[in-house]
Image (cartoon, rainbow, N blue to C red; front, side):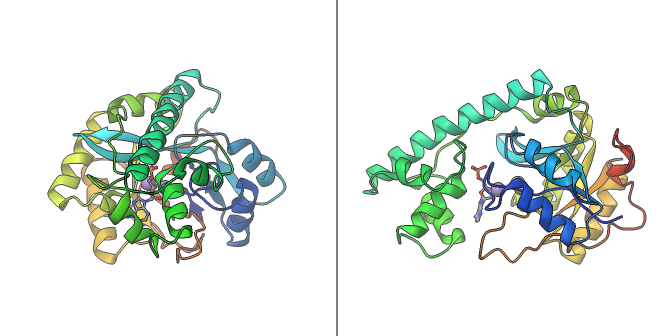
Length: 278
Ligand code: AMP
Ligand code: MN
Ligand code: MN
Ligand code: MN
């Protein structure tokens, strides 16, 4: 089974349309593919239509921003009913937070001498959703920075001009939205939060106790050590295993879809627990 269960389209901060992303997954020979845009399921209709014409099976998904101990973490919801009102009310909360944050980012940038940040950034987005990635792209385009990494560091974090805190909901509440929609809650990319392994384990334990179902054991950037720790922790905390490349399609992102390592033999694969059998 070749699965890629974490990917983005231009409905959040990806570059391609949902149908183009589904097309890539199919070309890469994926059996199972999930579109998991940040805080929206709006791209799924198009993705489902595109997948209906192809051998690849589409799993519904979303990547939701949440708080754990006052830190932003990402929870991927998979195999969910996108019509669920509790889920959509939760996503609307996050979308409103994002819209208000975009205003604060633009204000911060204006104070730093960067005019019309909102208009210029909105012009780069295919939808009304503005992520920090859109502001990053705008700042690169306007010549303030040369790449994503430096633009985040210089403008979009902490006390930098466009740095601003967002009040995401606590992670147990977010797990609740996903469960209300009949989905599985997956802790995304555990090694990307700049936490020590001790802290990651504490997070995974809390996640499990809050009702979380799975963790990403394989991502596009996983090292051999990370895979072996993840395998151990998934088993220790009785979490299902998921895998996803977190493909965005940015020109300088080397990640390609469908090139993931296989899940370790011992894994309890998440797709065995989806409501739809694939
Ligand atoms: P947001 O959810 O709007 O705060 O944006 C977060 C997104 O920005 C993540 O999903 C990543 O795709 C991207 N991102 C965050 N930090 C960085 C970074 N240091 N370099 C490149 N991309 C980043
Ligand atoms: Mn992203
Ligand atoms: Mn993420
Ligand atoms: Mn992602």
